[in-house]
Amino acid sequence: MTDTYDLIVIGAGPVGENVADYAVKRGLTAAIVESELVGGECSYWACMPSKALLRSGAALEAARRVPGAAEAITAQLDVAAVLKRRDEIVSDYDDGGQVEWLESAEIDLHRGFGRITGPKRVSVTAADGTVTELTANFAVAVSTGTAALLPDIPGLADVQPWTSREATGVTEVPESLVVIGGGVVASEMATAFASFGTTVTVVARGGLLSTMEPFAGELVGAALEKAGAVLKLGVSPTSARREADGSVVIELDDGSSVTAEQVLVATGRTPRTGDLGLASVGLEDGDWIAVDETLLATADTNKDDPWLYAVGDVNHRALLTHQGKYQARAAGEVIAARAQDRTVDDAPWGLHVATADNEAVPQVTFTDPEVASIGLTEKAAKKAGYDIRTVDYDIASVSGAHVAAEGYAGRARIIVDEARKVLIGATFVGQDVAELLHSATIAVVGEVPLDRLWHAVPSYPTISEVWLRLLETYGRPDA
Image 1 (cartoon, rainbow, N blue to C red):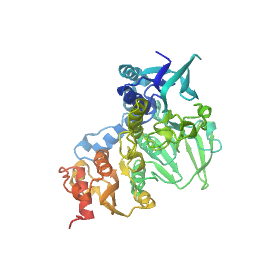
Image 2: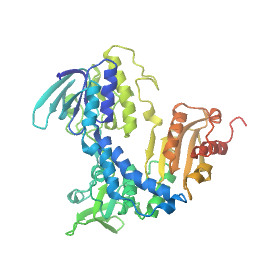
Image 3: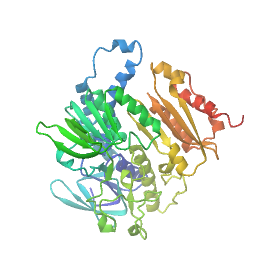
Image 4: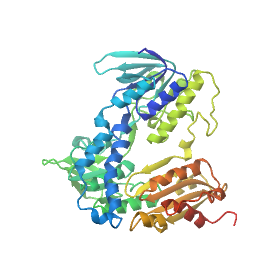
């Protein structure tokens, strides 16, 4: 390996891997720096293990909703088998396969902690203390992601709470668990542990899934309560302590308290930039890194000789793995284009921009029921000044839902921009709705007119028939 590359990427998660890969495909040389496992948070401590923990319970519940299958179920979830499958999916926390991929992609790996020491310069401190100085000919891309945010609650740090890492890496399931937070991580982990038989209590000041359509949190909350979870919404923790028997007591601002074997904190994320060396180039250590549409840092230090990029969660545009990988493709392409003095396509929806980050972000929350959404909610669309019409439909009325499950509970909503007669948002809640999302994403990103959507015929009998019912509820624009 050399110490000079066209591009240096700090962070070898899926975002950093894609930045480097796309740049190399365009003819640049690239190195990637990683202090933990190649593959990053998503592969070992977030997306993949969490979905492994959720999938078995969801499959079991889906079977219980179908007569014939339900009668064949004679036992509860095998938690040990679930954890074993989780270990297989995270490759037993061994990144050998990911390292092989880097080698095949002709990307050099420098193991150690990467720190920016000046424009286009990165030092790498290995586990044994050895320091390697790297220099970039053209660009440095920061893809270090985020870490769990620990709220300032007296005593909370002292009880050594779980974050998402400990929850997804669990080896012994607790008998009881308090989940602090009501977002995606909190809702998913509450769902998973409830399926394991853990007594779950959720404490969420702002309710469940509060940034989504209100019915999403309502339906997920109802399902959690049906699974035995206790929801304490609209209240906040005021203190935490661990008792002599090892249990954790969380005092709440309504005067009540909750006691459990363990507590999981899922109240937000903070950027992994605290010791990154940003101050050496005029930025603030520990801050999010603001970027333009081409993922180029907007800091003054980057004006005369643009070289610093921030890609993925660390730029705070859209904290989702798939959105970070989308940004990475644009970043890798534009870094190469600028290095090779090629034209930069930075018009909206161009090759070198991440336009979808603005109002076309898809997301699936893998609770039971699932929540799948794209674009703007009704509230967000109104705030943005759109003239909208909101259309709702009960998914349980669709024939495909009758086939899928008895007692199907679900709801769909589309947000129509009345000026252009196109969708700017959609939300689906229900069993198996994740697979509806990409059709909605194409409709939003492609700005497909409603009169053309009438010709996208849903197969019968599938849950996708809800598309036809939503259009019928809206009414034909040419009628």
